[in-house]
Amino acid sequence: MYYMIYVSQSTKPMLTPELEQLLQKSRAWNTSKSLSGLLIYRYSSEGKSGHFIQMLEGDKAEVRSVYDKIRLDKRHHTVLTLSEGNIENRMFSEWAMGFKNIDDATLSDLPGHARLGDSTFNPATFQQSNEEALKLLKFFHSAS
Ligand code: FAD
Image (cartoon, rainbow, N blue to C red):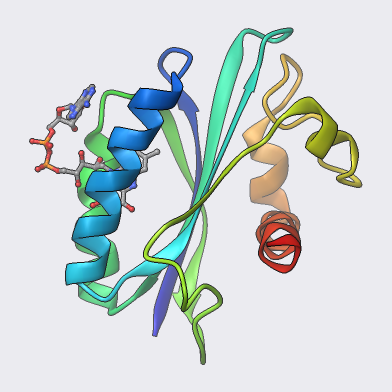
């Protein structure tokens, strides 16, 4: 089993219908390819910027193939791979693509992640510590 985690910046604020459309298409594709994972979106009105964090897991060739398409998607940019490799078991076996749109209240509950999506958020800090991104994904998994 292979996994991939990346962070990216949304090109513009994503409205709910746009996120729903993205999720609907993604879930249909991911289900057909036995991919699972979690997508987190956080828009900060203060920072006027949005960020995605996504984990994808499944067959290595399928993970790589969909990631190649995702990277080219104009709805986001500055796509930064945080972590990839083999895992024994899926983390998100029940989700073709789980989704969390993080609001300010949720964010304040998150130790160490309060900057996600605000003007001072620097994805590179996640890259320096892959564990941080994994912790964030696990937090949302256990809260579901
Ligand atoms: P097409 O659907 O033909 O799209 C080609 C390009 O057109 C896209 O790259 C995009 O730039 C643009 N585009 C397409 N639809 C829209 C739209 N509604 N609004 C604006 N621009 C649009 N796909 C998955 O299958 N699984 C995933 O887990 C997944 N996760 C994603 C996570 C993020 C953060 C983003 C932004 C996209 C994700 N996608 C995912 C979508 C993926 O990037 C591709 O759009 C999708 O795989 C379809 O590929 P395609 O080559 O058929 O592209």
